[in-house]
Image (cartoon, rainbow, N blue to C red; front, side):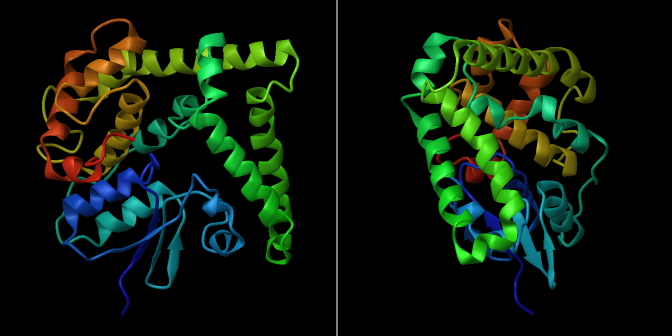
Length: 274
């Protein structure tokens, strides 16, 4: 029987959830990996859409079945691991709610200064690459069966690209600023006011060792740390205080520090947070 194959990408926020689970629960080499270059739009290739119709990573091919979300992938990894940990709760659904989306802040601009940085840096490159890949694959013979997917993605991604390229009216750009501001305010409020109520005074949501919920929260929190300039160190959480405008709650700080000491965290974030 062939080994399971994880389709992943190094800077994908939600790919980190199963990667942490693998590092915590599975022997070295038990899971094969295949890199899907999201920055170049490789996740939109017709051959990948046949694996994951959502065009996202992670995905997992195992035992003749395909798992196409981080929740499904991570659950499979827990259920098949020789080491058993606390199974997940409804918290997984909560941290994946759109209002807490950790991907959107990678593209957000709240003012002219952030807009100038985004429209001349990685966000522009990322969105441009996506649009080029979508355009190319949508016109390929193999892509014809995914026309509805490509049309929707071209429109959505294209609307952000138009903002970056200055091709929209001022009111549209200002509306994007407002949307970006509200999203960051929601994330900050969650960290300050909601997250502490879920966390223990020490350790993890799953107990003394990380459980299923923790793999998702660690991936989410590390992305917020990355976006605010943090590092994968014990005090890396302090960078998030640039957004919260106040010290993080003690439980959140302790949670970050508990993860930062684990070999799995150091392995997944060896090249920095993402």
